[in-house]
Length: 356
Image 1: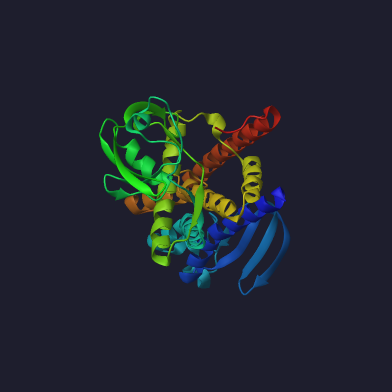
Image 2 (image 1 turned 120 degrees about the horizontal axis):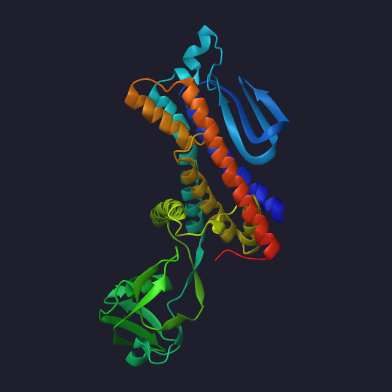
């Protein structure tokens, strides 16, 4: 089942990515010769109109082959107006950018339906209080429920922690309910150094409480689902970009990089936790795919976009020789990264080490 879930996840994300290129090419009247899911030998396929649709043997990618896309390709004079390399800059940019954009938009759509159908959220109910902490000194006890901080309503644990973390050393008025009664307590979060998701120190406010672990399902309306989904998609996109920067800066260890084996494992794990977890994981991987593909590395979509931008600045395209060399360098970098990621995957399997 793990293999089935992983193939389903990767197949959908690859299809969405290539669909972006395909639809924009068709919309802008560029001739599409082949739409392939996977690389390597053809397994099954059919030809409809001028386009061949195939599923290939290696399910780790896909491609849309357009007329005139290959350097040095001989073209019939009557079809040059439909060839990719004869299109104006804006059309080629739109076609190339559509793949990553579709991945990110797809993630937003997935999040929209997740929030619309309902997600569990952690209640702001106290499960434990650290002795001598600001919360204990203020009189907060187990099973108290925090309903407001400085007049701002609190409906879930994350609402509360967001306010407290941003308020080290600042007195807060925390409204709690205890049984049938309610009261307002004055609490001053203490300054603490903690590690962020990148392992770097940051200062936050803490009051010394832990959650009870109780959750409730919440279904959002259509409008709020759109807003929350857009925000979540943006946040994860920015986080993905920052993670790449932190990897380059060596803030994040290189051994955290994962490849196809890790994705297969995590797809199965998330599916075992339910549909919400699986589709959330799918949305996150879709955003990762979209962001990674716009990196300015030759052979990726970002490399093609870089060539187009340089052409726009120079008022003429780069020579085929320069682009061929750049593509080879990009391919070498990509293969090296894939081999390294696969090495990490195998090492984790052998040693039993898990990601932090």
